[in-house]
Image (cartoon, rainbow, N blue to C red; front, side, top):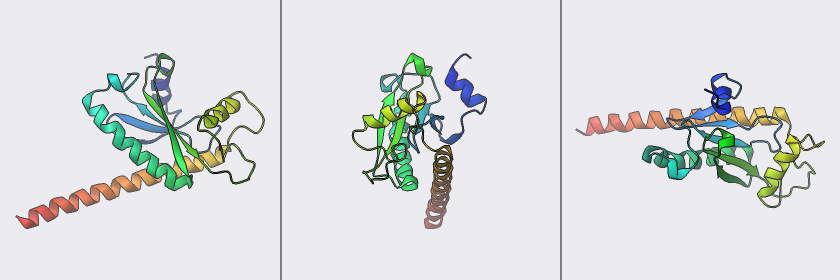
Length: 175
């Protein structure tokens, strides 16, 4: 009842971009340092893989794989840096940060094109959270990536369901 994460989700202050039976994905709340910084969050309270049920453990890999592929596609990033965390501070919710990283494009826009080590992305998040001028990512760009991610995940889900139905129909026809 007093979990911050659960309250944010139940009150609708965090938009759920995708979910399955065990996990959900949301965009990191502003101020955000990197456009497209998403978090996969466990629905159940536990801090890490050792505490996952067998079902959760079987679901987390495919969920991260799918999310990474879609995030790379919608952002055009070079890769997605992932860091899995869980602590009492996070309400004992296991969560995985998914942060798009880009090659140096010479744009001079670190909130969009964080380069260097993957940890620079987390430094950028801290700078944005501390209110350092120019560190926060453009909120409209963040919203655009979140919407594109949600749409792509929904489209993929529909294609998968349609293909499953086709396979069932083909199997029936073969009998």
